[in-house]
Amino acid sequence: MAKVKLTKTELKAQSDSLKRFRRFLPMLQLKKQQLQAEIASVDTRIADMEQRERAAKEALSGWIALFAADTAPLRDMLVFQGVRTGDSNIAGVTIPVYEGIDVKAAETDLFSTPAWYDDALNAVKSIWELKAERAVLEEQRKLIMEELNTTSQRVNLFEKVKIPECRENIRLIKIAIGDEQTASVTRGKIAKGRGAKADKEEAA
Figure 1 (tube, one colour):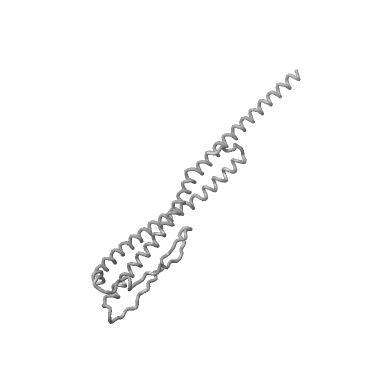
Figure 2: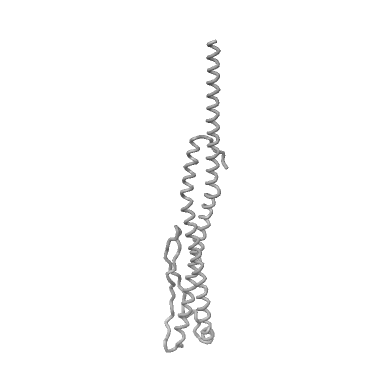
């Protein structure tokens, strides 16, 4: 801890800093709570996406053998082109929001392809959508967690360092000022006593 000046000016500066830290701390604590709640919400949504993705893959497994036996490979029927996202703000953090995926489907001859093709391709697209949305949620979690870590560090800094430091500095300054005032009064009395003694001696 840096050495503090034991003056009235420094006492005011330390008191102002303490007021400022006490004013900001509740806002930081509230932000920390909001971020923690959002992390919990995102975790729940990620777990839901994973469960739905597993269910969709299990549902698709019935078509895998059919695709293997067919002459048209799946990769030629459906092409993944990208993920569309927007932006949102959570407790001051800009995060991506899932909007959808872009998929290009090959033109097929309804008479030359089996009836189950459309259902199977829709199932594949559904899996891609779930995976894409989960990836966006995981990016949300990463960004929110980074902000939570920063906010937690600031809360700890205020709670464990800045506020106790200001309190201690104020205590030391008040003691020093009190001691100085006491010493000043004592010096004044001594000076007054010496002056009175000198007056008596002079009068004698």
